[in-house]
Length: 209
Image 1 (cartoon, rainbow, N blue to C red):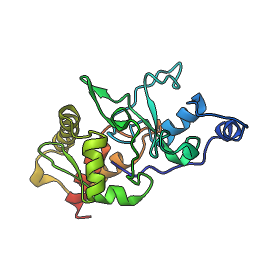
Image 2: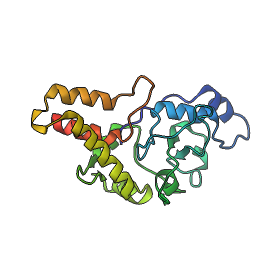
Image 3: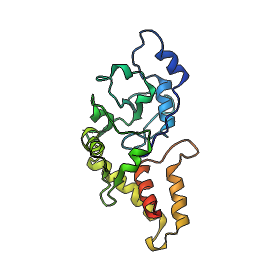
Image 4: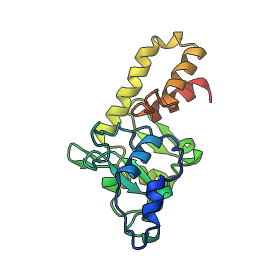
């Protein structure tokens, strides 16, 4: 995981939200705003969120999650600061991310450096962990982020960076910093690379940060 820098809510969403009697509805503008601020990766597992060119609002390609669930927190169902966009939440028939969260509340502070600072990974397996026991339980049990395929995908992304850097004893600090900048920032299309969390963690560790 990496920190999500939350933007202001879209003007169109605010206009809808303050309409008397408004109920939650995943509008196109709402979804697009969340996609853009997250660089088109899932807030939880960091998979690339599949969207179509014709209609990036199609909810079969993404899901809008409420960190404090609508079921338990009706007063926050229209609150933009309570929303993130996620992948469809299904790999090989196994639920994860928002689909696994269901009506539970998530306390992971995705909009703060706290969560990223608490996260670590196992390089060999791709497992994600948190030093905070409550967040650790949410990663594993509420969001199911350590299912076998997600771990394999993170491990594969990390191995790709290792191969690109070449032999380990030849890595220079400048090479590591250049690679780090590529993974911590959005590209020219406003997108983060999938599974960038494990790469950023790994390169920071190699740089001694």
